[in-house]
Amino acid sequence: MPAKPKPVPEGTHTLAPHLAIRNAAKALEFYPKAFGAEVLNVAKGPDGKIMHAELKIGDSKFMLHDEVPSIGSPGPETLGGSPVLLNICVEDVDALWNRAVAAGVKVAVPLGDQFWGDRYGVVVDPFGHRWALLSHVEDVAPEEMKRRLDAAFAQMAQKASA
Image: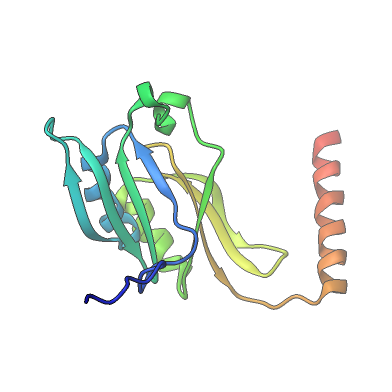
């Protein structure tokens, strides 16, 4: 008798994004170039569109498919953007940032050291998905975090009133 399969397969995390993309075939070329993703498997429908693809960045898997707005699965281009932010945390964010920019992402938030202790920036891929690229560079004590947060809000208020 075959062994019972694991409910959460080896190498799979509890939560994994599944992206709807207007041109999933182009995404399968772009994500390896921009983020070093590994394409694990691809299933195409009779029309040649991507029904399901599984990729991996670092130790995390994600999935994607061609958008199908008629069944409630539109991509960000159809929606006019995405409110979702996907985080990629790596040892060398500067290298990943440069790779992604060279591959053609748009910079939404420039890469920089942030008050909460991350070197962090946000890019938008050619399909409308938003990605935060980061490395944790400093552990910030709660009291210091509060001081920095208050200072950041004060600076924002100053800019807003100028």
